[in-house]
Structure formats: C-alpha cells, structure tokens
Amino acid sequence: MAAAVLNITIEQGATFTRTLTVKDSGGDEIDITGWTLRGQVRANQFTTDILASFTGTVDPDQVTNKGMAALTISATDTAAIASAKSLRPTLKNSTFIYDVEVEKPGGEVVRLLQGQVTFVPEITR
Image 1: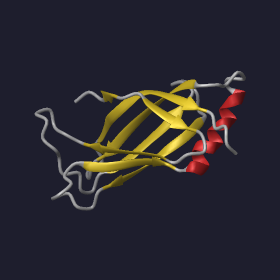
Image 2 (image 1 turned 45 degrees about the horizontal axis):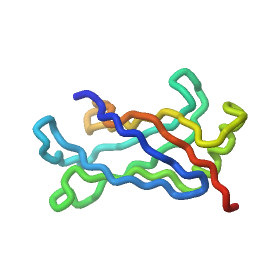
Image 3 (image 1 turned 90 degrees about the vertical axis):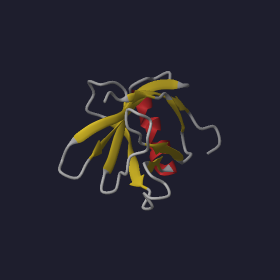
Image 4 (image 1 turned 90 degrees about the horizontal axis):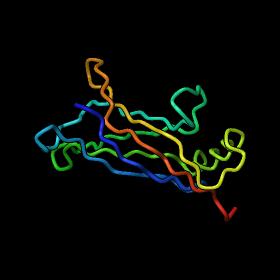
C-alpha cells in the first residue's frame, strides 16, 4: 500500500494534534493494536536535521475506535522549529516535509502518510 499524501500546517508554539484512522485498501478500519507510530519533520529529504518528531498514540480501544491513532507534537517542540531560521533566513510561512511510519508487531515497517508541512511562525510570545 502506498503512503497517503496529506499536507498539514504546524503553528509555532501551539500543540499540533491530528487523529487518523488506518484503513485497508477496501476502506475498512484495521485493528492496529501493538503498532508503533513514528514520524519526523525535516527541511528536505537530504538533511540529517530533524525539525520535529511526532508522538504517535494508538487508541487503546480498538473495538470501538478501530484503526484510530493520534499524532502529536508538543507546543515546546513546535516552538523549537524556529531554529529552522538558520536553514531559511527569511522564514515566514515556510514549507518543510514529513512522513509517518508504523511498525507492526513482527517488525514490518509501513509508511502511512507523507506530505508537506506549512510552518506558520508564532506572533504571540
């Protein structure tokens, strides 16, 4: 299964949270008990610098909320993305890239999501 493309916006200094539902190719939710989610934001695919990392949390009730998980970046971590100014000195609304992978029990790794991140700098400090 190819990764879905979803472009997102991250606001500096605000907690980023998105809920996602993992589905099979037929559109049915998948029980993701035991799966581990991880993801990173980078300026481009060639840099070793990680601008932010997603915390992935699988909903523990995979009966009622089958396939559901949350991706989060803390407000502290979104505030730290300001260090990206060194990568783009004229940082206003900047575009970066991200992806999210899951590791299934047994070790298989699958990329679920990928896309662009529009980063919006914080005004209120």
